[in-house]
Length: 198
Image 1 (tube, helix red, strand yellow):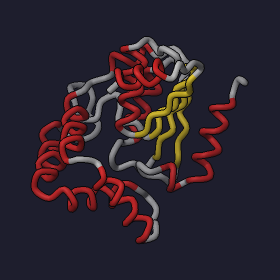
Image 2 (cartoon, one colour):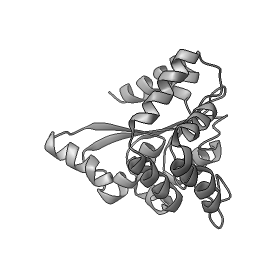
Image 3 (cartoon, helix red, strand yellow):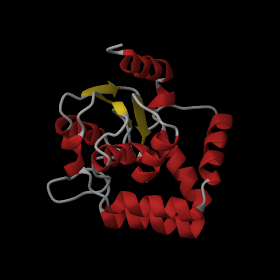
Image 4 (cartoon, helix red, strand yellow):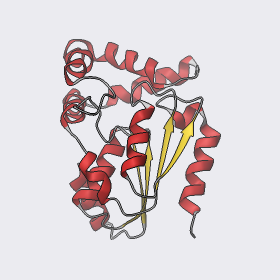
C-alpha cells in the first residue's frame, strides 16, 4: 500500500506533503517513508499508529501475539464480521459516545469488503517496521491515546525512540479514537504541528 501513496503523490505532482496516517494508515506511512525515501513528504503525523509492530515479537512484548490476532480478529471476520466490528467499535473509544454516532461508526466499518478487512489484519499480524523507523528524516509528530486498547501506548513510545527528533503527544483521556475522544485537543495539536516552522 506504500506504493499506492507514491502513485497518488506522483500523479498529483504533490510536494511539501504533510503525510498523516491513522492506525493501519500509520504503519503504511512509516513503510512509505522507508520504501520511497520520504519522496514528496516534508512532515509526518502518526495518529494512533499500528506501528512499528502490531503483534508481539522477541524483544517486543506489546500488543497481541500473532496467534491471538488470528483467533480474535481474522477467524471472527470469517464467522461473523458484523459482530467482530461491533466488538472492535466498543474498544475504539475511551469515552462514551452517542448511540447514533456508534451506529454510524459501525456502518463505516461495514463498508469495507471482507477481503480487504482480512488482508489488512494479515498484514498487521505479519509486518515488522522497526527497521524502517531510522530512515524517517522529516519532522514527525506521534499523537496517541494513553488508553488505547487496540494500539497500546507502548507502540507510540517505541516509535518515539526509533524516529530521531520525533515528538510524542499523549492524550490522557483517549483510546484509539483520540480524534474524537479529545476532539478539540487533537485538532489543535495536529494543526499546531502542521503550521510549525512556517
